[in-house]
Amino acid sequence: MWGFFGGAKKQDPKDTIISLRQQIIVLNKKNDNLIVQIQEQENLARKHVTTNKLMAKNALKKKKNLEKQQETVQGSIDSLQTSINTLETANLNLETMKAMQEGAKAMKQIHGNMNIDKVDKIMDETRDQVALSEEVSEAISRPYANAYDDEELEDELEALEQETLEGELTNAGHVKQDGVQVTPHDLPAAPNQVPAEEEDDEEEELRRLQREMAL
Image 1 (cartoon, rainbow, N blue to C red):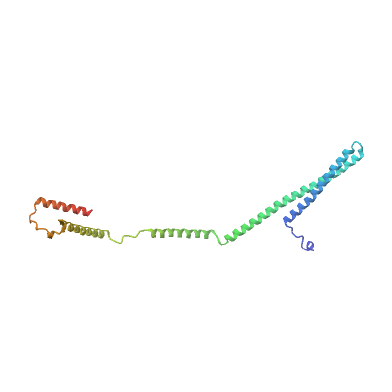
Image 2: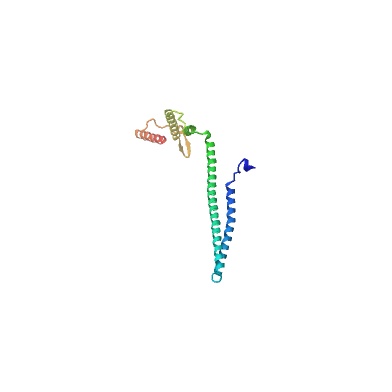
């Protein structure tokens, strides 16, 4: 009923190839049987070629007929094999085309929400964010500016140096006598008149101490 109203059901190429291979198996068996019969008739003709020429001639006739059948069967086998090769190639092409169609469909779906303008916009935004990130990193790693005035710092340093120098000079005024430390107030009063040479030596010693403390 299906063949009359709906046409023949489409057969899968793989099923067709299987059917053709099965037919080749049948024909190969037929071909092998014919080859055996051909050989038998040839042997029979050889056996009677000198004793019974009529029987030998009939054997050769049968051999010729069998050879024609064998050629026909072999031709059918070759044709079926060619059909199988063609079907296999066509089926491979079909499967390849289906795979390519699926790939194209997937790519179309992926690119459905994409276009060159959107891609360019995304790339521009990405570059902007990268530049911003670099600026932020540079700002974070930049050292703080000096929160003080260099001149003010120099004045404070000079005052500290003077204070330290005066303290050292005061400590230098203490001397030790008989292992006991005394201050200048404990010493006998010195004469008011100091020789000029001794005064110069003291001034020179004082300047030397000042230079050492300034280092």
